[in-house]
Length: 505
Image 1 (cartoon, one colour):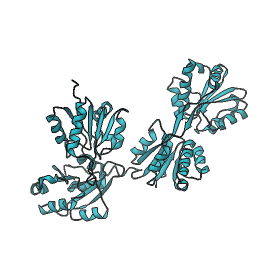
Image 2 (spheres, one colour; image 1 turned 90 degrees about the horizontal axis):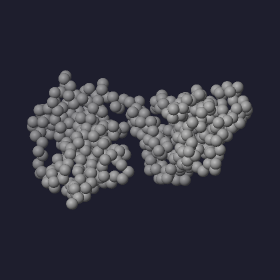
Image 3 (cartoon, rainbow, N blue to C red; image 1 turned 45 degrees about the vertical axis):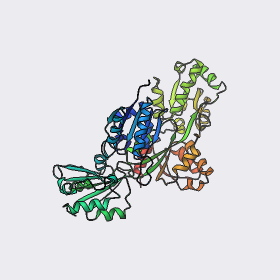
Image 4 (cartoon, rainbow, N blue to C red; image 1 turned 90 degrees about the vertical axis):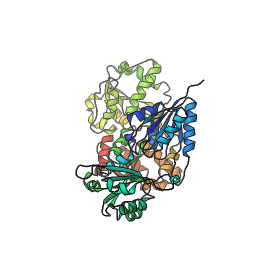
């Protein structure tokens, strides 16, 4: 008889994917089945294995997709099939998350389960709005309630007469639709109408919105601001501290929607750095690396490395593909012994040195022109060089080295192509405007331009505000009719981020 599996009831946290617990992340990696809710940040699913089954059971007030009874049966069925199941729930599973109901159903069915607490929105969302729930000078007690009680109960189970004045700070989850009733009950049972309060929409997300006022004004203010779920209400004198402690919404790029075009193989540090500065980042895989048929050119170039003076690498990807192409030849990095190695910039140099090799030259301007302008001609004339780069990359370096008297071979080791599904991704993402679109290569520019033109949105390309990593990429933008709003003075990811922060508006 097949042994039953196990169900982990895991709190996903309030929204910011960085607030998922380490235990929750570990279990997502191990899960055979992940059953997740509407308010779970979809980016958390990236922790799942490629073979994990993902089942959405989100319940929204306007569109109840799955009943609780159906979810309970689903968890039991998958566990009885011997699966490791993660039930991923927004916030904490035992705080207004129906985790208790699911645990009882599993216990009754004799299914093993474990509870993995999550960072509850009741605490995290006020913290992201700069509102501490307790403070020695303002509040020593907290009450947490739901604004969405089970309608089957008939009457409210909340003891308003005790809650209204019995706790210094009151936190109400799911507070939007019943806000007028909540405010009225608090005031009716003794809470002063001038008590400060705040309502926070989409807390911990880059789209977070915080509205402050008093119990007297909050209902009217929330209606005028069109506050929508999910939102949390905080009532109490601690709200006064927000003007001083509002750290999250004070980040330099908070509220900016930025599109990061990138290679399909990685999420990239650019996304992470922009998000750390408060931006709402959408990532679009605009280029993909693919192998090429070298027709013996690479093998011949490797054979001649013993007679080669200089080897040039123009990207970290070129370094990785060079090493990969050595393996079928049964060769290794010892073939570079005796060669001087030049890298176009620090990231490329880092990739080379991670292999245990020494880089002899890095220009101060990280582009092909920098290599040409800064390498002394006396080191080049009459020498032999090989360039390992992408197919159809710029030939500026090759032509310039020839003019300086070198014998040069330009050997392509990989190619960049447009990823599958790229056009569909562009169509989906561009349904809403971006403050900026970042581009780090000419290939990204051309692929984006082609996709917009093919979708009948060619004019939209001209109205985008581009943040470019450097002059070469900027030229590609202008050649396609686009507008460079920001250009990095140093052609690195860090230089681009710095330029975006300085040029924000």
